[in-house]
Structures are given as C-alpha cells and as structure tokens.
Length: 291
Image (cartoon, rainbow, N blue to C red; front, side):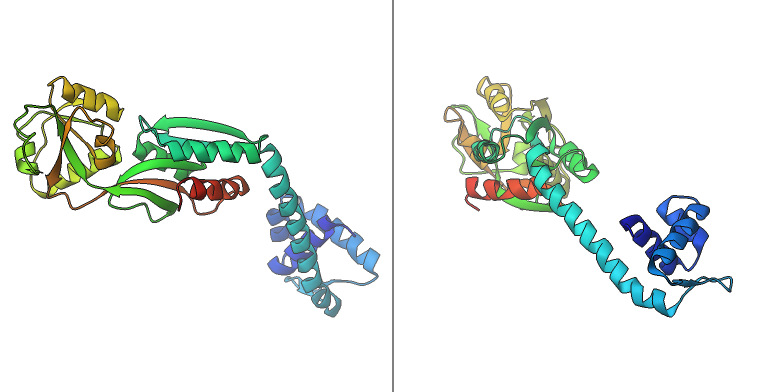
C-alpha cells in the first residue's frame, strides 16, 4: 500500500461516493476506483459495500479507517517537520518599514537574525503604514513596522513598541515657543508641516481634528520626520511629530498638543498564522526591543 491509496480510501469513506471523492482528490473517478480495487486486493478484503447507490464501509473498512487517517496525519507531520527545517535554510523574510522611520533596534534584530540564519534571504521595503498593513494582510509581507492611531488591527498579530502623544515643533522666537502646550484649535490657525496621510502620526492628528470639527491647514508634507522638522526650522510652518521624533530635533522647541487623546503607536504587525521564518525572527525582535 502507499499513501495515495490511503488518501483515496479516506476520501471515498468520508464522501460516501466515488465521484465526489475523485473531485476532492483531483483525479478521475475510474482512477480512484482502480486504486481502491488494488488496495483491497493487497489487503485481501473489500473495504466498501457497493451494492447500493451510497458507498458504505464494510466492517473491515470501518476498522481500517481510523488507522488510515492516523497514517496520513503522521505523513503530514513528517512533511511539516522537513518544511520547517528547510524553511530556515532556504527561506525568505519579507519585511516592511514605514517610510522615513529609522528604528535602530529593528536593525539590531535583523542583524542578529541574519547571523543565526545566514542563508535566509531578507528583503526590506518602505511604504506608508496603511499600505504596509494591507500588504501584510495579503501575504505580500511577513512582518512590518507601522505607525497607527490608537490601536492595531484585530485580525493581525502585533506588538506595540512606542505609544506617545503629538507635539508641535517651532523655531526659537515663534509665537508658540513660550507656550506650555497648544490646543488643536489654535494650532489649526497656523500652516502645518506633517507626515503624509496613511501614516500613524497623521492619522492621530486628522482624527483629533475631526473630533473637534476642525480642518488642519496642512501646508507641506514630507515622508521623513527630519525633513518635516527642517522645513519648520526654516520658518515654513509648524511641524507636527511625535514626542520621540521631537527629541531628535534639539534646534526646535517642542510644544505638547493638548486635547489629543488617541496615542500615536509604533508597532510590529504580522499575520496570525505565523510562518516558520517569522517564528524564528520574533525572538530576535523581542530581545532587541527589550520586550
């Protein structure tokens, strides 16, 4: 006997019909019948009662069925074990990262992962967070570093790395520079320099303004936080970034934005049905980010 015969036997038993079983295993009905006949000949007994329109198991067939299922499950376990090993030898990791975001611990995790599994091909692409999340959902990416407003999609696995508020960044001498905080209403009176739509920080700003019936005056957009800050330093508007991003811009004054209750998040997201390569990467990420 072979695994193919066991597969056909289980299919016929579960479908109670040769034609339906053939459709399930994607061969002709005559092919299934021939294999079952050969299987019965090797065993020396009939497995099915073919005297009625419905195919029924004989006593011998009923006794054989659970063992056939166990044999097929064991074969699948062998295949999975081999796939797991070869996946870590010849696999590929597809990583996405929000545009303009340099997060050193992520690179530390990738370097550690590469040392552990040097033959796995690693690819890295950048896009806005909304695009990255959809690419993870569609299976085009294994994992992505994204920004979001308030929470992560429930249909994806995730771990939050940063949760923080928004600040306005202005140069010395600006009217807001001496303020302890600025309201959204007052902020909306200035030309703003922001990250583009589809990024987590921009989503937080847009949602907060919409909740108060405000329309922010976005004068300029840039994909990199450093570019947003540089434009503000040249007097072209008020930059809106997160608290941690503002810490990298010591030449500007950071003024907390009041009334923004939804935090800006930075997180790793992946599909819940994790691949073997992804399962190998996640411990490196947790160590690098001290999670």
